[in-house]
Length: 133
Image (cartoon, helix red, strand yellow):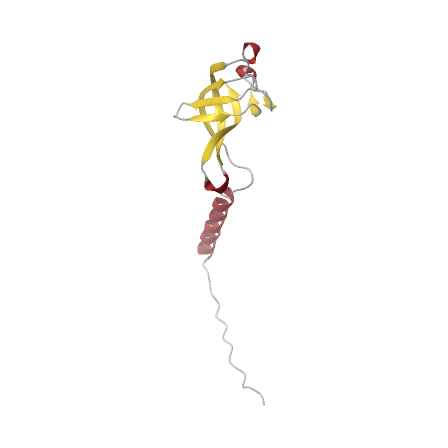
């Protein structure tokens, strides 16, 4: 026994080129937003001016930001000296005192980001780049 053949209807949807371009832009912007906010990969630093204080021989310390707040300053970061030379790692020359002791009040520009702790237990800002002023 043969079943009767059903009619197939083909409808064409026409999309105005300007509307198509607008949809394409919206999808691209949404994709960029999602990619920028994923919890992995490189992140953009926030830049601010402030003063750095180094608290010991290991070179770690804190940067007090002009706009308020403070940021952890690790001893080993990428930095730019007053002459514009870039160094990856170590302690900036402007933050070395006599005998590598306490240094405070050094004017800097700091690039930092917020680091999220595991299991949503907070976050804290940490410097990833520093420029001596």
